[in-house]
Every structure is written in C-alpha cells, then in structure tokens.
Length: 486
Image: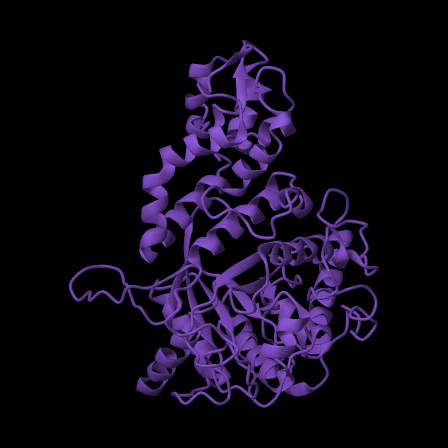
C-alpha cells in the first residue's frame, strides 16, 4: 500500500494544473475526529445545484512521450515519474470512496508509449472500477488526442463526462509549443463525442438536448472576426471522415467485460464533454481565445470550456519567465465573458465591437459592453423584455425573472430591486424605474465609468494585488453569476 500511496502523491501533484476541478485538499491532521481532509489528489467541484463534490483528481501516468514546452510533465523534465496499474487505481478509488474521502474520480493522463496504449490501460482501470467493484459514482475521464475511435467509445460508456483538452487556442501556438500534437488529433475525438451525444439524445425522443441536430462541419469556427490562426475545426480539413462511427465496438478480448459481471445501464458520457485552454502562454488576445471558445460551444456542444492561467513552472525561451505572475485577473475576466456567451445571449463580436482585442482589466465585460452601447440605455424595468433586462449590468437571470413576475401584479419600485437580487451599485446607471433615473450622474460613458471605478477601486486593488484574494473573489463572482444574480 505504501508504494501505491507514493504513486498517488506523485501523480496527484502532476494533475494539479488541470483546472476542470477547483481546489485541492488541505492535508489537515485528523486523529481523533470523524472525517478526512486527505490532501493527495482530493479536489472539490460544484454541481449544478451548488453542492460541493469531492473528487479524486489524479493522473494515470506522468511518464510522457511528448515534449510540450509548457507542460510540467514534458519528456525532458527531470522529476519523479510513476504510473498506476489498472488494478491499483481501481482499488485506490473504491477504498477512498468507502472511507467517504471522495464521491467520484477525475482521471487524466500523460501519454505513455502512445495514445492507444495509455487509453487501453485507463479503460481497463475504469472497467474494473465499474464492473468488478460496482462503483456507480461520478467519473470524469480525459481523452488523449489521437486515441482510436473504438477505445474512445468504450471509455465513453463507463465514464460520466469526457474531455479533450485543446490547451492552445491557435494553430501557431500549437506548432511552436506542442509540435507533436495536431489539430486533427484534437478535434476528431471531440467530433466523435459530439456525434455520439447527438445520437444518444436523438434516441431518447422529443425534448432532449441535440435531438435531430447534425454536427455542422462547414466552417463554423471562423466566424465573428476569427482568423485561420485559430485552432479550430476550420471546416472540412480538420473534420474529415477519419473517425469511426460512434457505435463502433472495441476489438480485443483483453478489454472486454468478463462473463457474469453485472453491468450498469450503459449510456455514452451522460454528463457531456468539456475542454480546457491555457491563458497567457502563447500571446493570443482575449478576443482570439473567446472566439475559439464560442466556436467550441457552438460546434461541439461543450458543457464547459475551462480557462487556465498559465503558471510558469518550466524554463523555456518561448515561455514567460518563471518569475512572471500567473495572469489570474485576466483569467477571471475571460470567465466572466464566457458566462455572458453561455447564459446571457452575448456574442464575441458584441463584446469586442469597440475595436479592443483584450478585455478591460478594471471592470467586468458586461459593464464595458453597456458603456460602449450607452444608446441602448437606460432601460425601463417595468416595460423591458426579459432579454433586455438580462443585458443590464447588475441584473442576472434570477433577478430578471423576479422583475418580470412582479410587474404582472404591480409596478416594480426602485426599492424593490435590491430585494430581488439586483446589484444596484452597477444597475442604477443603466435603468429607470417608472420613468425615474437613479444614476445620480451625467449620462456619459466616461462619467459613469469613473464613478463605478471609484466605488469598486478598493475591491479591485485588493483583487489584483494578492493572488489568494483574486482566486477567492473570482470564485465568489462565478457563484453569483451562476445563481443569476449578476
């Protein structure tokens, strides 16, 4: 068991730079009370209902055949290496689950030998966990670019969520920083996963997501001002017919289920797929990053695109210096913009209509958009449509619904807005209530912007001066946004 725990320590540390899950365990000593705060590999994510979920976050192996410049696990790095055996990882996961350390598994991996060799071992581990140990909890499995369609499909049948990390948003960055990776190897499994999800949901009948939709492969990725430098499917060349059909079965007895083993009800990746991009490693603009993200949502029906501020851990002439601070504030603004794309009906073209290629570091993207489009404001809250209310800074999905519901019975008063969850320190400059404007300033973009900066300056300074404050505030803002408050 000591050998397995030593592997866990190495491989959990190597997995910490994947941001698809949030914070790590604390490693608190706990000898006399109930519960565990075991640090190795335990991270926390949040469900759609806001519930915190503990996951075992670990690599299957950090022995990598690739030499990506930005990666801590690159082949030429000199540090401890380890690989789990399939039985070891399956047993470790189920033992952690039985002790109530975790509720699920987040499994990624470096590329040992080849994508198929590594993926076969991952599949065998998940097969043991599901069918030998009877584990029915959440499993998130990373798909290695270049894996064969048959193995990918089998992994999708035992995992709840799949992800193929795009990592770099432009083909130029990919060529310089990860020359062994090819866009086609990244997008082919994404396309296969999407087609399988469409097929699965179409079979479920009316009212399911993606029903009757077909994956559009004709140039979806080059819209909204993007250039052909964006690492996108880019139409047919990268989305050719190289992938096998979603219904392909895995060949070979070594990975087949044994006789008499009880199966859970098989469903291909019921929690969908996600991906991740690194921020601040290749010199791309925010517009370029978000354009790629927007196109990933549109074409591959992503559940989520994660954005990871690059942490300089590798010495390289083509990377930021190791003393460079991670661009956490920039990551936070990109997440805010991503939220506008996903839930508020915005497009990348709207957010960058003013000609700037990067987001404003001082105010959130929704406020900046409103200041650039001041002719659309102020909005009368007692007459505006739900969609118009959603575009007012300080009003989110929940507060907009409350306003619409309230005004069916009586006019909404200004004092009611705060009770409905509206952030008035932002919203007051962009709305009227029964014809009255409460902004208390000249209705000019610079005047309003300076006023808002003065109010939020204390928060913004602490937000950008200290990394921990930045992370905590980013998490708080994202929870508020998820709740539809802002």
